[in-house]
Image (cartoon, rainbow, N blue to C red; front, side, top):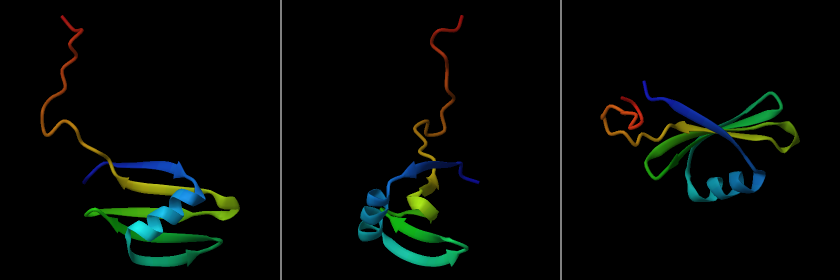
Length: 75
C-alpha cells in the first residue's frame, strides 16, 4: 500500500484543483463534501469541511526510488 500524506489547503486552492483536475466523483457527507480527483495521473481525495476548512489527501512522494537511505554523519 502506498503511503499517504495530507495537508490543509485554502478554499482558493480547492477551487484551482477543481478547475485543473478531472472530477471522478463527489458526495455530500454530513456538512462536508468529499471529492475524488485525478490530476496528472495521480488520484487525490479532498474533504471540504464546514467553516472553510479543506483537507487534501494524496500519495506521498517517493524520492528514494527503492534505495536505502544512509546517514552520511554515521560512523
